[in-house]
Image (cartoon, rainbow, N blue to C red):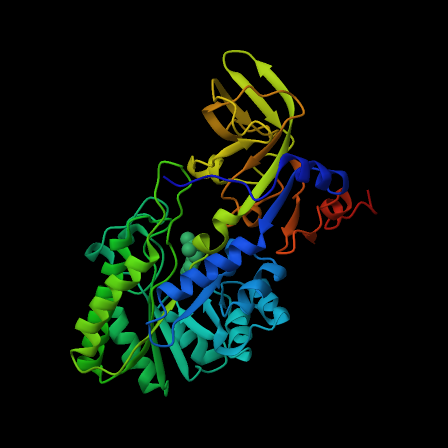
Length: 416
Ligand SMILES: *Cc1c(COP(=O)(O)O)cnc(C)c1O
């Protein structure tokens, strides 16, 4: 059972609401730091362990700074994400650039920053070589296709748009070596929000085998394997978090057997997790505007799917706490909705909750990754503010709410 506790009380939230009207996101710095340390400790045996936080999960410079202070790098996949890392001071090989369908200028920016460039396709070798020349270090993203089963979010590897086939991997390393590349990495990411730790052990096992095969066939020493992201979190209280210590121990066994015992040089191990780093430590706080009683009972919030689209997009479960009613019996059944003109716009369907009244404030859990960052402006809805609950208990606004002027900023009314 995953416990769903809040790091703040109803009174504290009401105080924040005097300054920062709902809806807003709030992140728990202490919990993010503790979790980051726990993550690194669980894998500390790994040679030159590095976790590159997937910036897309929570692209906020304050969050990146916290993680940088804990020793994390940044996994970027777009120009603004690269620039954000640069502005925070995450530079050089502390940046992993894992993009796909990438424009030339992003490769150039990544190269200029000294980032590790992780190619999604074999054709990108020539694409970069012809534009700006290949860097000294290059990494390839492997898609095992029918050799592995995927999961719901990423889908079957064979259906997934990412990565090189196995044959392409060998052709690609040989071609890159031919073109003067000196250092090589190997990456894969074939699951998302996966709670079964054996998946990651199998992925490591598969990559360690490939390290040997690449060495034998091409005389290329893989310097690092990047296990990707995708470690899941228990969105539903019935689920269990991934046991990181156990995952680490099991990967170590495979590493010892497949790398050390075969006499291969040590291989660095990297991760690029996003969700499990910040996900459980962010909350969307929203107020009940209306109650509606038709064929079903609805609770209408002052936020919507534009603020958190995972329930609408994936049917994802996000736990909900009604502030001040934490211990009241969950003896009502509601659909909790937003205000979009879009029937998918529901945070919860047939959810058992305590009796809710207009004006109640709800905390939607596990919104610290792929939450605010997935937000969009459909129906001209504005993205909310983000607040940081600092370790000393004070609140810092780390992103202001969008205004109507922001929304109109890209439009030109002058010639109407
Ligand atoms: C999204 C993504 C991640 C992070 O995934 P999480 O599920 O947040 O851990 C890491 N690497 C790549 C290439 C991604 O696209």
